[in-house]
Image (cartoon, rainbow, N blue to C red):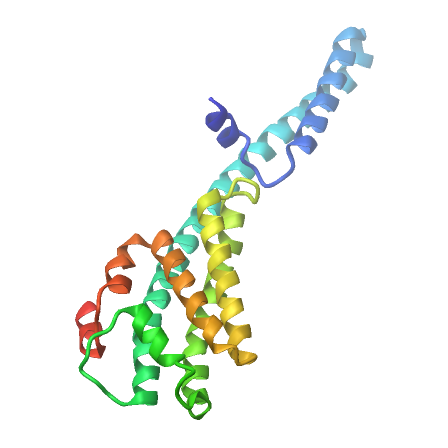
Length: 227
């Protein structure tokens, strides 16, 4: 019942405005009915005009709001699909960046192992800063898409009613990506390893269909087979 009532009053204009106009029209109608003759016709006509206006405005507003909600839903679904693809791109980019650093290998590693190889502080990591920065651009792209998705989903879910789990996951993805960017900038590479593993866990939580790709061992040849 609560959901049905919420859908019934799902309009862009604050309901308070409609209620106030409705009350004013009701007052005019009551006054008109209490008055005699011509003196009662004027307030009644005003009241009925206001009532007709508020009802028609509400119906139009509701139709436009539903259309906007449907449009927002399509945009949100598209952005979520785009975010899923960009999260998957992290897998290929970490392989490419690592192979640029240590050379091409046919060996298969898990995502966690690829990350450790890329941010291995036992090597001369400063020589590979350009590859690391290029990989970090993928993280930036994921963050930006996740933030856009949050904004659209909030609009679609009428702000306060956004799906809590979805919002939580997207915000965590944004936060982790931002932390990774900051750690790369400050050259705290060891911390990046933990953050990237935490990002993986959050991505899998939001997109369970990516769990296999993030958890199995793979090399660059395997990535093309997933596409």
